[in-house]
Length: 140
Image (cartoon, rainbow, N blue to C red; front, side):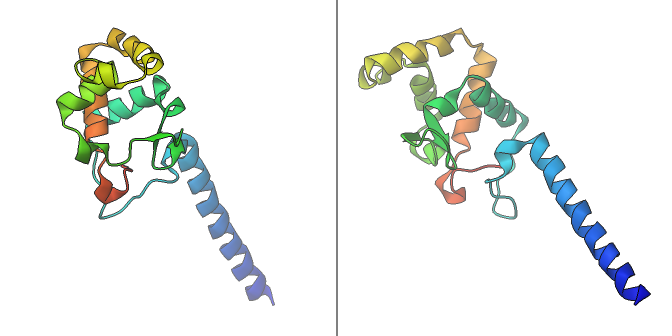
């Protein structure tokens, strides 16, 4: 009987340790919960990681979604397959031919991104370039 209780306590402690580790990991990076991890996942460069932080900090999920997180009206999943880096830059800043394609309100909102530094825009472009359809648009 005593061995049975010891086994139950050990099993419960193991489950509790795993749950606490998962909770801690989620608290460190709550947006990563729905993202794929494994052999098919693409490793992000430091520049792309910075771009992901800028994407979040600038409130991009208010208008766009990636991997189902954010506004589903304008998803960015697979955008790295559809657009080159220069095209992504034009869409971010509402410059070039893109300025005439965007609704006026969207173009005005995107003008605020022109206040970002060149390195921040480069990081954002690197992040969006890495969003490929082959991995569901999600990156680790």
